[in-house]
Image (cartoon, rainbow, N blue to C red; front, side, top):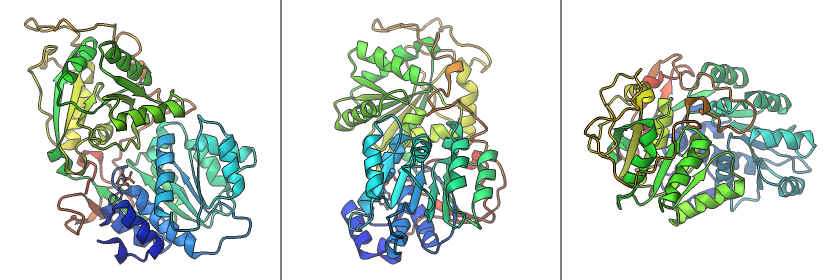
Length: 474
Ligand code: AMP
């Protein structure tokens, strides 16, 4: 479906043409008309599906068609968990709304507050914010939310994971009850479901069904390896010249730092990106990676949300995630836009159960690479540690053993990469509540064959994660 088939104004269509967008993605096709009609939305979708434009375009259309109250109050608030996502969403609003007389501002922590105060003072129609800084600035009187017409809660499950749920409830108390609410979450754990139920009014449920196309463009492989040997295996794999741009995922920020340091010592240019780094350091690392001056970016999951870098040749799961959705999300960073990509996952003895969960979710087994010098007993049962090495194993001389996996990488650190507050990991990912599927509208509608479909569900409930596959690409 082309964008001029929606009731979008010429300035918006012009901006979309300038962006090079031709056809709407499945979530955009479903969401844009509903948002334009004033409906609330309950969207089950991840980044990478075109979700941002799905809400930004109709919001821009609605706001530009209504006369603002005097004093230029904030009329749209988008709350999102990470700085990267906030910055990216603001960029999208600015790009799509560049020919409209609407102003957009973004506020997040980790940087000076002054420029944000100045922007707010000048008057903002659309505010994109992370919860902590938003509450700070509300407390100081810089942000008033009494005139909000549209509220967007983005990546709600991530906000729960990061301990933001109480902040969200505080924010909800001060936005007008009469408003339009657009709610997005990649998974629907119980707490998120009940939050959605309590704030949405007769929402249109939209789920973007991930499809198998990514599986065809991303070749997956698992390497059984002892925890201590992971850094050396990574170094070994990175000597392959085919690895032109690699994104390496670790479970913790501490782990990300250690891996990046290990690689740098081995003369492999690598940088780490995670929540403990200043915003400027994160932007710099990302820019270097995009430019190609850094070949390897080591990231913790939360920092990687919203990472939108083209031509990533390899994704390495240095640690396997305990949530299959995270695996799907991570490997979707490569093999984008029809390019081919490789996803290499390291699995130690403690991670076998995670691998089984992942394979159940993606409904296929991940091929095992046996032919590597650090191979650990692949047949060891998952409850056993495989810190031992098979007898025939050879170890290249360059292997650098820095005590990885001994302290900081222990599972106790897991999930420590959060925005603020304590880590309240809940049942994110256990999205198994209610599953009535009414129609499976396959793509083939101008978005390119097999590129994801939007499913209407009979009630705003989502299917269990066991049926979820890959992030949509079009
Ligand atoms: P999102 O899921 O919103 O993070 O979007 C993922 C990427 O897709 C971003 O780089 C967008 O600029 C891009 N994108 C979104 N919608 C379209 C579209 N209709 N055509 C081409 N690219 C798009």
